[in-house]
Length: 280
Length: 254
Image (tube, rainbow over all chains, first blue to last red; front, top):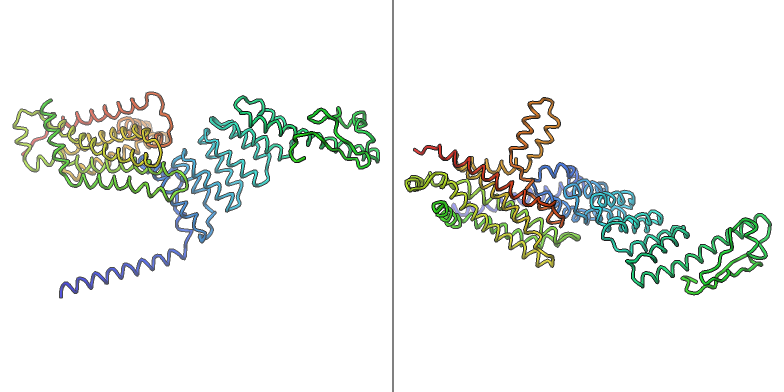
């Protein structure tokens, strides 16, 4: 009889615990996304109480954050991304680079908050100046947002970090060109061409880019000069040489092969026949 | 010296028969093994998580081993009355204290060697070079050696429960002693500031022995740091051990 009572009590207690647990889960689910982040203090304070185990605490929070942000049902889930990855995990273990870039990807890609993502990557690079990967990623985020000049600036910072591959200078030159500053882009490609760390393949790419950008820049200058001539004289110039005495060009450019650019006076358009020019 | 070695070996033999030590070591090894699976939950940095979890497991479970084995070293002999037999031999009291401490160090060295090797293997199995972790494992041992000296000190004049509390509090205070530096800057009075300065200088600064973060991130330590940190831990432990011997010399057994 005593054994039956004991077993019955055991079953009842287990049942009671199970039901209570289910009730707690139900209540927790109703306020999901709020409680977990409500009391997460700044990493500086957590570090103080970590008793020498701050890196492990950073790992635990990073793992928790990955699981949290992998749950797409969380309400208001992007509100504390910068706090979790920047103020908490990064303060606990400032040399831990993964949280910077993962937090930045969540912010830029999912929360569409480019500025917050860049802030996180900037913080990571400020604390880890040898981690060129952080401004490199920031450069691509700016590229994705169509901010090519900003992307070029980030690739420049990445390229100048110790241990960064010289190929990053190519990205900087490429972004400068995408930003529309063609003469500046040519100068940056010339830097790549003259960098002794680059191999023959990189120099061949630089040579072709310089040719292409030179043609594009010259044609753009010529078209602008022709348009200015047309607006002053009411007609396009008969020959390109007229642009120089009119003060619209300092001298007449020639293409990378040393030939004059072709000009159609009837349409007022210029073109190039230069060889090995991308997109021609 | 022979008496110290004999007591040390006897303490070591007695301690390794204690099941609690195997339980602690087993949990530490289990954690290191589990870290391989925990790292599956992350995005990147799997090796870092294995290293962090492994080093913290060695440190925390080493602390538990120090507390559980260390605090009853002297009191157990008094409780069992074996101290009378022992001290009736040509054994000085300081030799007894040093022998007990050396025996505890042997236990901790063996425990550190086993769990440290397990961590090195776990990291190597992840495809990373594990050798950079060795200085951190050595420094954990230095920290435990310092705490072991405190365990022996507390054990020499109080009961095991108070000695366990004292050793644990020393660990906590040792990792928070930097706060006296902060407190000093905010203290209004000169006496308070002087007290903070003294406490900051005198209390063990266990953070100075903690190089886990640097080792995990492959950050080079400043030249001479490792040697200075080891010297700090060893000298501090020696001071505590001398105090323990003096306290034990004055103790009367009834």
